[in-house]
Image 1: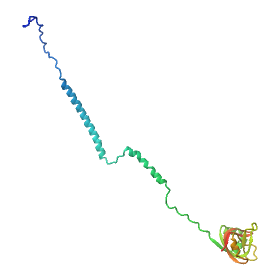
Image 2 (image 1 turned 180 degrees about the vertical axis):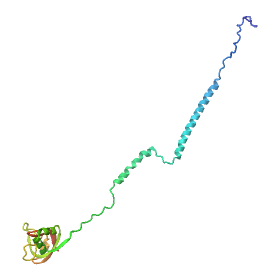
Image 3 (image 1 turned 120 degrees about the horizontal axis):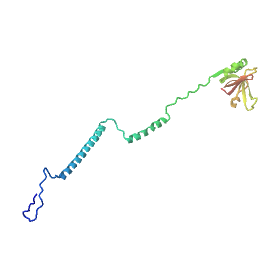
Image 4 (image 1 turned 90 degrees about the horizontal axis):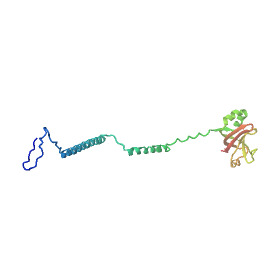
Length: 211
């Protein structure tokens, strides 16, 4: 290849190199366009995420609002059992129901009998007479035989009731001294007392009084 001379200079010009076939110089992508594209993609993704979150939260709020069942908070559930002991306390109080009144036992029936009759019963059958009068209150009418002290206790006075010439009598104990002072031998009196014993020494009546 021949050298060409520069028309305006006496020096030789650089050798001429013809361009390569199908050669295209590289094109540079504009940087500003790629930057804005990434910005829009990020903003769009954030917007979509926000919409999804908002839709999910709103759905839960709507479901809660439409649910007619009462909601119980954690605080209510924690404090609910505290009211339970009040029932046990209330149940532990004594009942004010009226208690049935205790029925009084009927007083034992008073057996009225003559002194001579009760003495005769013990003379005939002491076992039968004991079973008949045991624990009973007797109202005995008889003739005063005597007022005497007890054989073993001089401070204790006894009223003997019995018919004349009878060996056994009804011996009445614990009669007040004021009543004994008013009676005389041969008087007919009535004495009420509790049967104590009967046998070979007569019939014994305690807690007696003249009526």
